[in-house]
Amino acid sequence: MSVLVFLEHHDDQITKGSLAILTKAATLGDPDVAGVLVGSGVTAAASQAGKFGAVRVHVRDDDGVAAALPQPRVDVLAGLVREHGYETVLFAASVLAADVAAGLAARLDAGLNWDLVDLAVEDGELVGRRPALGDSVYVSVGWTGTPRLALFRSGSFDPSATAGGEPEVVPVDGELEDFSLAVTMVEQAHAESEGPSIEDADVVVAGGRGLGEPGNFRLVEELADALGGAVAATRAVVDAGWYPYSAQVGQTGKTVSPKLYVAAGISGAIQHKVGMQGANVIVAVNKDANAPIFEYSDLAVVADVHAVLPKLTQLVRERKGG
Ligand SMILES: Cc1cc2nc3c(=O)[nH]c(=O)nc-3n(C[C@H](O)[C@H](O)[C@H](O)COP(=O)(O)OP(=O)(O)OC[C@H]3O[C@@H](n4cnc5c(N)ncnc54)[C@H](O)[C@@H]3O)c2cc1C
Image (cartoon, rainbow, N blue to C red; front, top):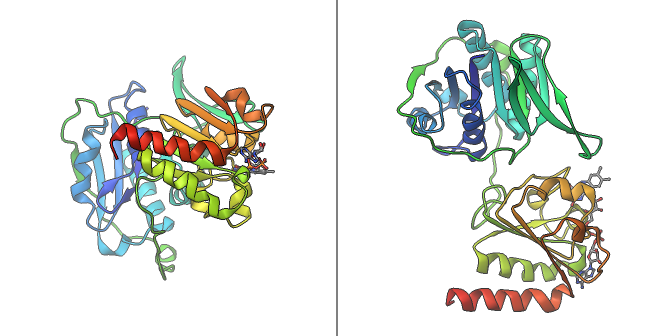
């Protein structure tokens, strides 16, 4: 049941999501857990993977694969599966990883289970768990052959550094397909933001339509700043142009699993819930005592956000001595 994990990186760091999948892979029982890094100047990052369970990291380090394009990565992964016989290939959800996973499935004629939230070995078989029917139930899914490909929902696992040592770093070369080189990256832009990303933050403060108008997101930003957290938003306010899509949490946005999630003026629709229900503690502020979000909040504050948020921010600042 040898496992290969696609390790995505930003700058010189392997992403938290990829390390979380590696951590999970290391628990499946087969010590043959490998990672694959593709990019320019990525070799130094390979050693990070050892602590999270990789005994080997295949590294394709050259300028020709610097751009985050999927097809060259499909070439590299397909070559590794064919050469080393990896039976399982795992991906942490991202736009790039989804493209690579789909491309690899087509290239190898392999089965890809999508949007998994867990993976286990049951009676010697690998079984995935996947939410279904609007996330109201979980179903077990399997594969009819190898290689088995799986893409995981963000936040499904936590990365956990083990006592693992330095992984063996195996350079990967070989020709890329002509058609993989036919696409070039014209431009890549980064959304400018300060503080932690909503996927990585321990504290997320989210605002919804109950804030009343876009300018009131300042209340959410100030509380997030005081708590050292990140700002998130519902689809309703993103669609209304109050806040950027990169902050959207939910079915068609991001999945987050912070230690604390503060929901301000959010009704708690199922499509929002599926993106934040993994938070350890959920605090909701809503003036409607019957708002659905109170059904799954740990602390329900029935009040006007405009009154509560500034006071909360002030108290946090005072407590922190700021
Ligand atoms: C296919 C599909 C995908 C979707 N994907 C997503 C998704 O990814 N993420 C997402 O968030 N939604 C998603 N939605 C939309 C979702 O169904 C809800 O419409 C949306 O989450 C509602 O956003 P909201 O809570 O900000 O607004 P509302 O539902 O309008 O809720 C506003 C809340 O604020 C409260 N309120 C009003 N004034 C105040 C005040 N002064 N103080 C305190 N509380 C106040 C109200 O009581 C109300 O509960 C999706 C919908 C569909 C159909």
